[in-house]
Image (cartoon, rainbow, N blue to C red):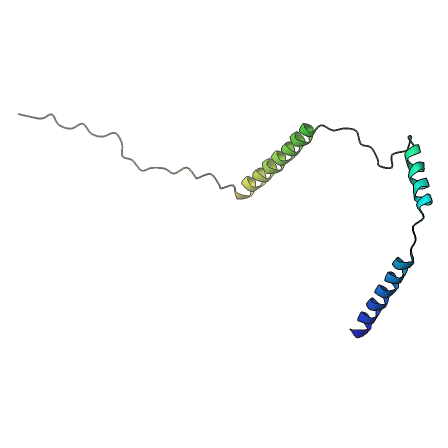
Length: 104
């Protein structure tokens, strides 16, 4: 632990000494700035992509989410599908006998 502190302290001291002795070259800095400003046709280093409108991205993302949810719902419904209830027969008697007419 103390060796690490010594290394850091030594590095700090060396950096401070180098910073104290540094003398910036004003002419060299101005020449670099002038060269940079004179180059009007600087090639672009970034790869260019064709412009895509924001709403196209939104629509495609929405469609993708809808497809994922639809397929997921179909998969869950297929896995959880219940068997249809079997036809149950109900016991019933034949036609009811007519009731006797009331006598009064």
